[in-house]
Length: 118
View (tube, rainbow, N blue to C red):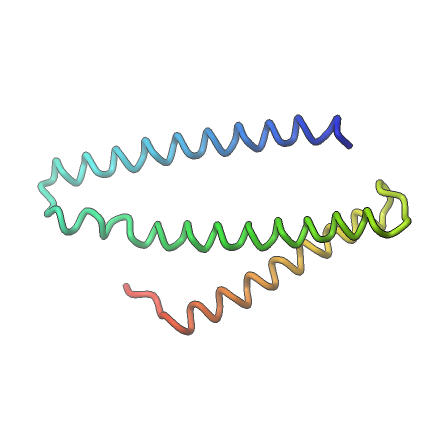
């Protein structure tokens, strides 16, 4: 399992780094275009306000899913079954699904409490 974990973690880190760099460059390009179009300084943060709310929800989603998968991994370690068998994989898939369901419930409640402004 350790021989697989390091390359997967490295690829995940490389993908995250690449997407972060592209996002920063894209945001910078958008800000420069807004300044060149002589947009008022009060309107520029409004361009990115909706995006920041989406980033918070995305962080919440993946935090819940990864935490539930971590709990699933702990259960796999505690239950005396083959760690590479179908039980372990099924339990991990189930824990990821439960994490997504928990996130969906929280996201719906957040949306009902504070409707999005358009």
